Length: 370
Image: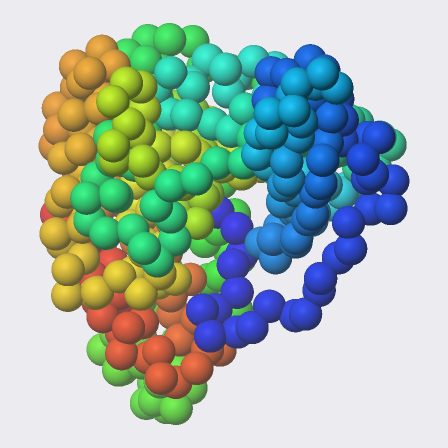
């Protein structure tokens, strides 16, 4: 889980220029590989920056190519360049290399039949940078996703994770993200949120803007965090994306064969728990993608049903009640303090959303502890 900024905070203006070494000569072999035209010649090209890189810069390059010097037919092409620079997320020094290693190790090839990933055209490694030249993918993404799109994303995730839950050996690479990912998230958000919650619970409502009863209930969850984290740690393990949200998936409902979902940005991936990614997907929809909070139960129900169906298709024979229990345990554990912290630092106009989401999360926690 990334430490994403509050929804109302604008990202600081940073529009990196395409590296000067990227020119037509460098692009020719990449375009030939992408188009499967071994004699293609680039006719024209252009680029623009995608301002969504956490561990580097992302560029889209597109243009046209003549099939060969003797064949005047023209084909359109596009590529994505991700420049990953050496950088360490708190407690996660391998994050900047992880996506490359997911490709290089074959892990992403192992899961791509169930959950599609962008094709890697070429990787260039340097001392403190990794350049990933990738397929430019398309589909429904971000705020355009409706419940049916989330259902597709959940089902394909289940098909990807099911084999591991059914007995396939879990990958043991040291560079995968930590097993104790949840405890890191709780500490990252809970520690700064605690003081304001305590003051608010004692009668200073302006300390957080949250109703006092909600602050007290969130504090009680904080006090039980180790019990909840132990419950999370006891859940069945599988390979997790750990940043599975609407900006990192492209859904193609009309695909006839194979997965309908393409998952991007695997730099958080590691060994997590059943339903962990579903919890993140639903929480992100409610907090960051303006999904109607009054429809939270419907979204969660649709996602969990589709996820459990995908798990079963992949050979898992467990009880669907375990999926719900895991979701109700891990989602409030990882997100309640995060939402409380956002309520302290973000635009007051978003307070009704945070209050509604926090009430939903605390109700889930009560369900998990019942």
